[in-house]
Image 1: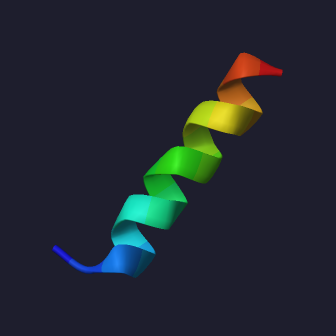
Image 2 (image 1 turned 45 degrees about the vertical axis):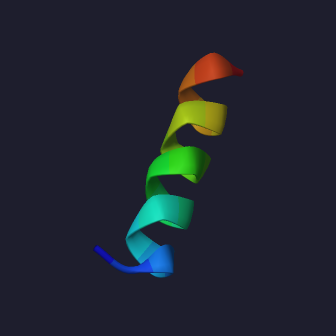
Length: 18
């Protein structure tokens, strides 16, 4: 797992939350 994947998942969560 790379930081990019982590960031992408985090971003996905943000977009889903909003």
